[in-house]
Amino acid sequence: MCFSWLVFPCVLSGGGSTPSKHATPKTWVNMVNDFQNGALSTRLGIPYIDGIDVVHGHSAAYGATIFLHNSGLGVTRDPLLIKKIGAATALEVRANGIQYTFAPCIAVCRDPRWGRCYESYSEDPEIVRLMTEIISSLQGEITDDSEKGAPFVNGHKQKIAACAKHYVGDGETHLGENTGNTMISSKKMFGIHMPAYNDSVIKGVATIMTSYSSWNGVKMHANGKLVTGYLKNKLKFKGFVISDWQGIDSITDPPHANYTYSILAGINAGIDMVMVPLNYTEFIDGLTYLVKSKFIPMSRIDDAVRRILRVKFTMGLFENPLADYSMTKYLGCQVNFLRIALFKTVAYVCRYRHFNGCLFFNH
Ligand SMILES: *[C@@H]1O[C@H](CO)[C@@H](O)[C@H](O)[C@H]1NC(C)=O
Ligand SMILES: *[C@@H]1O[C@H](CO)[C@@H](O)[C@H](O)[C@H]1NC(C)=O
Ligand SMILES: *[C@@H]1O[C@H](CO)[C@@H](O)[C@H](O)[C@H]1NC(C)=O
Image (cartoon, protein in one colour):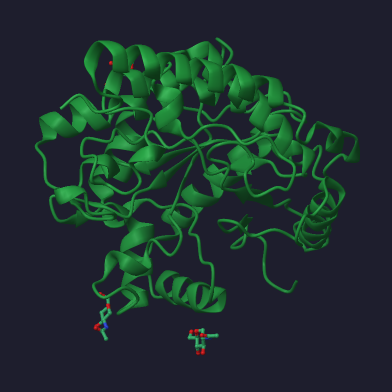
């Protein structure tokens, strides 16, 4: 590893990527700790965060408990169940040495043609709001003395940082097109899609991911009004904003047509951490150029660094940077919750069917 961990503060495992086929928890922990030792041996010794998509249980890990997708859990309307699932999931992720999940998806799916509708708890914003309770069990229950909007991750070895996504309006794109354009009024945006973000911020969510989609033609990855103006200034969110996978690339059409512009627009909109899965030198070179030539103010970089460090401090990463092998026993031990969840979901679906003749969408 020869890159700077200040501009490279996080490593993500892409969807389905694992250290090896059928890797044991010990192999995962070895991988995470190898990266961590690399991070700790750099000049500043700032620990990195390891993030992975854990959207229905720790599904990339062999032997982990796989829970239902959010659409299946939403029908239970049971925040206590979702809390148990969150706690179980956090333990299984920690079993592999990982401290950060790109979940929950709090999309409000308003069009069943959207191919990712199953990631949404409901078309009803009130149910989605109820289900943000999962944040309190992935990260731990926020304490009364917490500062408004500050990230909160407790129980350092058993809890993980969460990520509310995809900010915002991903569930109501035109014709249900994935990553498309959400053409709705402010009233609908703030009445339907935004409330669950307010709830997530109040519960101390550590990070929020911007959506590939646009709102009335403006890409959310470049929407300074909503990312900085609303999320950071109005809702007082003090964790960090992360881009989606190659999300800034598609600020231009076609994607990556002008990467320098993508970096400029994304960072100035308020994105604090950028997911760069392929060519990280291109990103670092572009960002360095833009800062040196003052297209991006240093105050913006300071804000991003402060937010990322705040999340790392909150998580106890500086005190406990290395994963603990004693946690490996927790992988796959949460099947009881899966049984309960399955039973409840099936029971609710059957009842709902019986009365309404339909399942998830009430159109
Ligand atoms: C956020 O939620 C809190 C608590 O429910 C409420 O008092 C506040 O008005 C909400 N803020 C916005 C901007 O909706
Ligand atoms: C890329 O974007 C930058 C910043 O807006 C602009 O100055 C430059 O001319 C663009 N380059 C090309 C090739 O369009
Ligand atoms: C990464 O981007 C740089 C431009 O900054 C380019 O020179 C290089 O070829 C790219 N590498 C790959 C593997 O695409």
